[in-house]
Length: 114
Image (cartoon, rainbow, N blue to C red):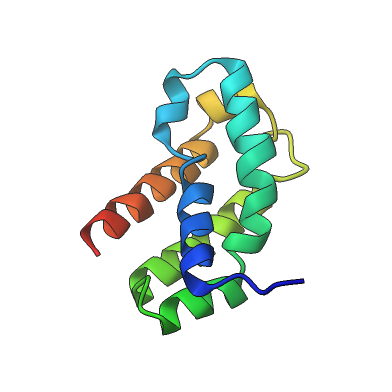
C-alpha cells in the first residue's frame, strides 16, 4: 500500500474539518447525520490522530495552537460517543455539541490565517 504524502494528509485533515461546524445547526437532520456521524466520525479517527497531526506540525502545515485544538476537538468529540448526546437532536440543542462545533470553526478560522 502506498503511503500518503503529508500534502495529502493535510488535504484530508481539512476535508475532515469541513464536515464539522456550526453551519450544521442550519442543516437538515439527514445532513447533520451524514456530516457528523458518518464523515467526521470515521475520518477523524485517522486525520485528527496524533501521528497525523505530528506529521502536519513537522511539515509546518499546522501550528502548535492548531495541533492542540485539534487534539482537543478529537477528545471532545469522542467523549460524546456512546452517550445520550450521540444523536442529531443533541447536536442541535446541547452545549457539549455546540462546544465541539464551535471548536471546529475556530480551527478552520486559524487554518485560513496560517
